[in-house]
Structure formats: C-alpha cells, structure tokens
Image (cartoon, rainbow, N blue to C red; front, side):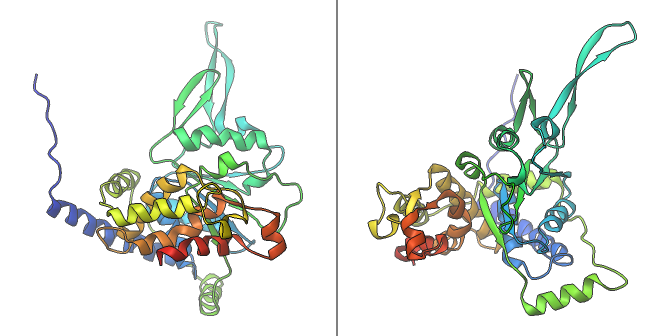
Length: 334
C-alpha cells in the first residue's frame, strides 16, 4: 500500500504563506485595538507568545486591562477561553477537574471524570500568586506537556493551549511567590504600564459613550495552530543563533561578565534560548519580515529574561534593577 508523502513547500510558497499570515495579523491587531488602547507593545508581545506556542505572565497594576486583553484575545483568535480567579482556598481539582462516583440504572457504580476549566484553549489564571503553592503546581504539567493526570489517567488538553496568568505587583499580602520552575515555563513576562495621555483620552471617550467598541473574530484555533507551525519554518541566520547563545550564557554566573553577573543570584537556563529562538521568528513575521535579526533578540531580551533571572542583595544595595542588568547584557550585541 502506497503512502502519500507531502512535498515540502517551495520558497515561493513560503513567502506567500508569510505574506498571507502578515495580513491576517494586521487585522488581529486592528480588532484588538478597538478594545485595548495604548498597549501596542503589550499586544505585540502577547501575539508573539501565542504564535510561539507559549504562555505569558502579565504583570500590572489594577485597571490596565489585563483581564480584558485576555478575553479579547480569545474573541479575536476564535479560541475557547476560560478564566480562573485564584484565591488561597482554590484547590487543584478546581482547575484540573475531579472524578465523581456515579450509580447507574443497574445499580453499578463507576467513576466519571468531570473536566475542569483547564480544558480550554486559552486559560486565564487571574492573580495567580494568590493561589497556594499546591494549586500553582497543578499548572506545571499542563503548561509543559499539554496534558493532565488525574487518578493515574492522562487527559490531553486541546490544541492550541495557552496559559495567561496575571499578577498585581502592588498588593503582596496573602500571596505566594511563584516557584522558579513555574516561572521558567512562561515564555514571556509582559509588564503592563499605564497608557499614555492620548491613548487614555481615547479610552475614556470610547468606553463611556453610548456604544463601546467590540472585537471581532479574525482567526480560528486551527489557523492559529498552522501559524505556529509556520513560525517554526522561519529560517534563522547563524549570527542570530550566536547572539541568542551569547546573551543567555552571558547572564550565567559561571560564564558571564563578572561586572554584570555579580548582581545575579539566579541565571537563565536553556529554556531562555528556546524562547528567544521562537519569539524572534514570531516577531519577524509579525513585522512582515522573512527572517529575524539581532535587533529582535535585543528587543525581546527583557520580556524573556526578566522572570528567568533574580537579583541578589548587592543589586539591591547598589540600586540596580533587572532591566538594567539585561540592558548591560545586550550592550555587546548592539
């Protein structure tokens, strides 16, 4: 029996696919922009995360539209989204699901698994640091392996599957810091700041009138999966590969510049290289380019390395911030 083998796409076909995806992504941006004002970089970073097949940690003060951004992404990308409000009494079963004992018509008892909210394509874990460590760890397997295990049985999660967690940097009472193992599973840490003056003016007028702007679906789940597959076909030059390796390894205490790493207590691991490789490809396509450049590495260094490094006491004494450390690591690449 013969097996049909799909022929690899020609360079011309690849260029057409990239151009078509670029047009759709511009429509995605426009649709999100009807609801989210003054967060262009944040929107781009969330799209890069989704195109890379990763998860994102959104950090910002209340009122900067973290929740609304995730809801809008679900609408525009045509994927099933659900929200979990994290609290100290939230249990792992509240996220993953639970087995219940049922009795049938013949009196026979059996267990039935009731799926939790994690069985969706875009899960929002609101204020994730308010959940207990036990509940936070329930997300680890799902984020890495795209499946969950309940009572010895594995259940695959739908594709695509993404976790967008939010965190409030102001109120830390009654919160639990995310462990390093879980932080490393987020492709990006995206910091959301207040909008600029003109954007806030537009937002105020658009959201307090008789009608508010609404987002419309532009993509679908299968189309997002195909876009993620296309991202992995984007060629990466040797100079970009070396820049990624140089940047990540320079942040490690064992290999880096002592003038910089003396401020570091925890260094980025191999996942940082993988995240930068995928994200640089996605950023290039988002901007209509066929291949990433070293500028993409520098532009994505902060959101990808922020949560994969930690400052020590020396940095706090000298008043050095994490972004300043990352910027120093990027200087040889500029």
